[in-house]
Amino acid sequence: MEQLPPRADFDNVVALTGAGISVAAGLGTFRGPDGLWTIAPDVERAMHAEYVPGNIDLMWQVWGGMHEQAQEAGPTPAHRALAVVQAQVITQNVDGLHHTAGSHDTIEIHGSAGRARCLLCPWNGPAVEAARASGDPRPRCPRCGELVRPSVVLFGESLDEAALAAAQHAAVSADLFLAVGTSGRVAPASWLAPMARAAGATVINIDPVPGDPGPAFHHQVTGDAQQVLADWAG
Ligand code: APR
Image (tube, rainbow, N blue to C red; front, side):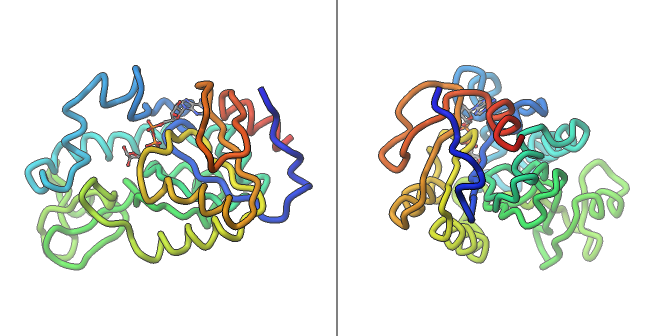
């Protein structure tokens, strides 16, 4: 297993994280033999915009459940390590664990399951506000009473343009770009490592599954992000 280079050798560390970094908090990954989609195929309905609003209960069950589980478990050593080394975090995860770990400027490019937005009016805010306002199991808008959905980006929806621009700016400004716990299969997040490489960064993948992470990467550290990042942050 190759090691990560010393943190002190870099000025601007950027980490793109995926589901793998939150496995230790009890959350599943999406793909692979024990991925959510393999063990519970109906979960995928919660991830596609074409099924909204019919899938809104499933969305709260999947995304709301994921966020609750994460907040109960709390950040993992890997989330904390990225905060300690003051990495700029870009995450595909919607569990809020990087913020809780202290990476308060995390760029949540797939949104957050801790936030909700109204299906009808412009309201958006903390999901707990909607739950409190509703008085029924289906969280409703505190402003107009309509149903609300988790503020997560679904397949078929575009990312928040400001978040994507911030992520791309961070990637091309990095001198060390780490991809942590992501299969790198979903665009536009998967464009970031190649952008960082083209801008001259050292680009390293962290994943326990051995393999070639692709041409954007200088190498892979094959291991559990929990161990790799906790050791690296010292
Ligand atoms: N440490 C590091 N990596 C890990 C660990 C671990 N302990 N455990 C699993 N992994 C790796 C897996 O090997 C896999 O490569 O995490 C990766 C998870 O990949 P995916 O399940 O595809 O998750 P992700 O890349 O985050 O998915 C991207 O797709 O489903 C959509 O919007 C959803 O944000 C998600 C996006």
